[in-house]
Image 1 (tube, one colour):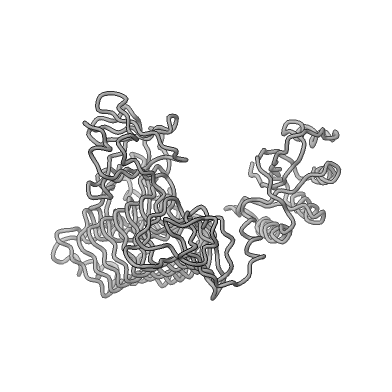
Image 2: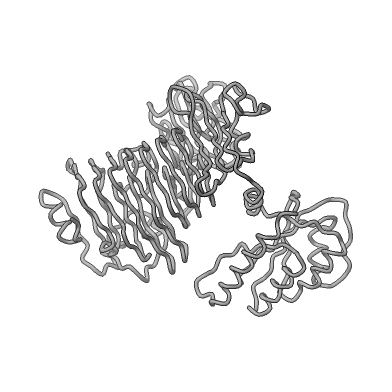
Length: 572
């Protein structure tokens, strides 16, 4: 049974009583404790759902549908979902935001009784978190101010000059910015935490940049465990560090990468070799094997948490310029449904390593891209950036969501090295489209020479990793790049969407690498919509992957590899 979410803030009655009385029609008792209740409308007959939606709108009761259209939905259902989402975004200006949340189910046809109780019992309407940004944007104006942030600043100051700079990312994230505002971080400073950018508008973007002289300002959401006092020996050669992390620790970077990083295992009983480590959720602690106290052994120890350094979901009209993003165990920059984003002159390093999910055997499948655009993305420019030491891709746009469009995305003049993939692309999903993607004049070196290659369950390095793509794809251009050496392949092409690729004027400095591995898979009716589910044996099993092939798989290497690739795939 599919479900919709309709959200309210409810005062003075507990969940059990509310659920019982909505069903039974009894008066609702009052309580002294304020709660927030999400009323979940169960999926049902389209006509009844339409009536329920229209009745709630007519009564000025705000609600939101969290569910997106799904495969098999009728056009009428998709239209209804679009109507609900659009209509209720207009009703949010006067809402208040309480705390706490509980869930109550209600069926279509019960909305009249629900509305009556809202009126009689004085419910306050919840402002769903997703609407807060909408209201902020509706109430914002152009201001064009410049705010400064420095390590010795003061969050109580106005931030409008270097002398009155703010101090923390928390202050930056909570600030209500006007269109055209700039947030400038002082060069040479380190700011702990992650960045939650605000959206600008066309021609008036929000800019996150740098001021002063010296190295790029650093944003890092990691925890500093460099002090010997942070570690205690819990058994011979096993050291424990308790940290106030909110989520899994995915990597431990030693001496800012000069001594590499530690080796993650899934369970504490798997710690067997020097620098093996495991994060134990129940203890909220990390355990690592070392013959001596790690804080005495290394001058710097950074514990990277499962978090994007910049989390930009649903953002638009944003510029990032001259920042250094590092030590995030999810993505460097990540988020879906973005548009008009510019990322230039930024450094992104030591990214990824946390678990995306655990398989049936309890093994963690890890992830982490330097710069990722997931799901809807349009009008993007990434230029003159340096990206290195990422678990997965340095740069990627990808999706498996129905009806998604990715278009007008340009990556140019970037330098990418020691990532498992320099650039990764794939898109699946019913009705998905990709248009005008350009990867040009980039320098890509040593794919698979990074920290994660040996730790992966499926080491499969490639400069260009093209997983299965079923989206309607056109104007996909790879040109003018230099690709130097890869541990496994320079190009890995899974299925037969290659007629959509225009590839020319690239330099291939193979240095013994395999130029291309092509699996020859179909462009429709694939078993899997996720690259990490392509095989069932939890390894990079070529035979199983190629079992669906509709064209002859091939490996292109040696002196004539480039000539063969141009002939087979019609690349210039």
